[in-house]
Image (cartoon, rainbow, N blue to C red):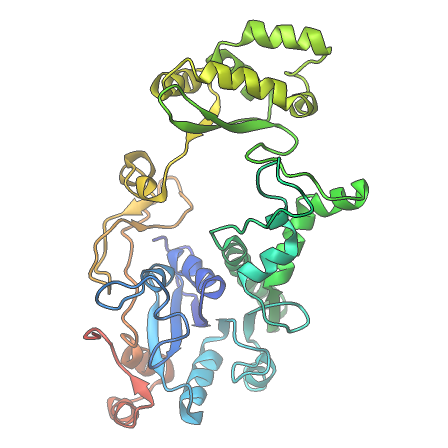
Amino acid sequence: MYDLLSGLKIVEVSSFVASPTAGLYCAQFGADVVRIDHKAGGLDYDRYMVTREGRSLAWENLNRAKKSLALDLTSAEGREIAAELVRKTGQLITNLPVDSFMSHAQLAQTCPELVSVRIMGWHDGRQAMDFTVNAASGYPLMTGPEEWDPATAPPVNQVMPAWDFITGAYCAFTLLAGLRHRDRTGEGIELRVPLGDVAIGTMANAGAMAEMLYRGADRERLGNAIWGAFGRDFLSRDGKRFMVAALTPKQWRATVEAFGLAAEVAALEAELGADFAASDHARFVNRERLFALFQSAAESHDYADLAQRLARAGATFERYRTMFEAANDPDLVTNNPLFGPSPANPSGFAYPATRSFANVPGQDRGDPRPAPYLGEHSEEVLAESLGLTSGQIGDLIDRGIVATSDKDKK
């Protein structure tokens, strides 16, 4: 964990994926992130899957390096404590509704310098989740085998909630932009980031929206082929499936060399009057002829031999793995400095834990920190941030307004 955001305190009132991701990324850069939950756990506290001890592995990993304050958020007193912590801190990340007890307008009445980032569903206030905004984006109906009938083929949903993670990363950036604004003007600001806008805006930024409007129709399904360039999955002689991508002339030449297809490719270029090295368009429109050549060559080699040849030539490729295989792969995990030793996870399950994705040369990333137990830091946060005495905190605990560590949860 780096200390680039050391001294920055953030309150996070959130659930599910996008909002906790924003706080996680800030915490991994050294911010002091306090997650506020209802004392029985937020909506995501028992998110599937859970261990035999009842601990959510998703919650555990999205909340590493944070502190936990557990309050009775169904009570007016508990909500006021949460609001006062936000006012004292001055920075908030949340996915609660605009008019909730975490309303920026209400909090800013006594904390005008407040910078809040609010994750929404759609820009008009409608609810949304990753899987529903993905349906609206068009991508699931662009995915699948190219032989499927466009009129009757079903959508193919993505497994990873990509829009949630993109939104979380964007919100961490948005928070820092808001802090830059406050440093420059002295003014607080509310920044609302709709999940749906991240999805449809990313589609537009990728040029896909302009493409559909220009062509006046949908793009065809391509199976595992890369749109607009050369790339697809191939199968080796020993049954290993791997992906190859050649988007640049250098990558193309390296791929042809590794597969030993220089003569065959030259003959096809002469037949078609094409220059594959100079034009990704030529590689794309003639992909079926090229795919047949490369698949035939792949069937003549075991994957280990092909991998050596591809790596030696400088090609871009990777073998398909199951996620279980990836989790046990030494190159991806064990020997990757992204991962550190397992901290004392609340689940009690030991496994490699991520550090910050960024690698700062010359700086030690430090060891990963565990997620908190629910309410583990309640007393600490109330004392240090709100100045409550031990007697006041004890009274709140006795009355069920504040909860402490659920380490003994069964």
